[in-house]
Length: 171
Image (cartoon, rainbow, N blue to C red; front, top):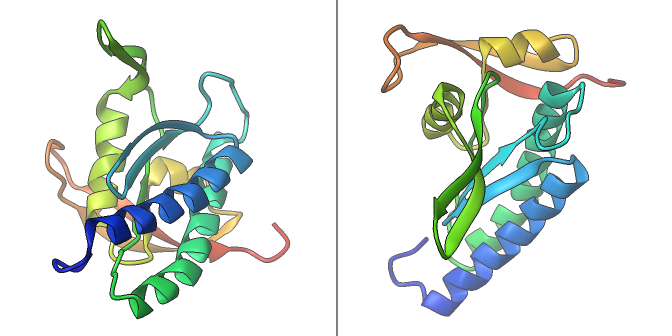
């Protein structure tokens, strides 16, 4: 956002952003863990299991990127710049209630959430960076490209990373 933007304008943009992406989260049956400014944490396959959770996550990310493309042009004309990058990983997490008396949320913790967050931090505007495990699960459904092995904070070895360019026609 512009440093000179009025707080009400910034909050209006965030509300529109959260509304657009929140609608997609529910359409693809993701579990919204939290919003953190313009960051969103979503997970799949919990609390209700779904056999195609990797595909749902990637489909949602592709739909979000398309939606954001439409919104960012409008916001740019108003002087707001909001980047959009996604990180998706698959693995085991510890799920449950996190917080303290008076404020409790349902959340996920573990290396897989850290990996998704680190991939998100590495994503350039419009990129959907996925771990090798996710890419293997959806490679017949997507057009993708190897980004390379990326060194990420908290991971001892570089992580093979792929960029999802788009969804294959008819899939």
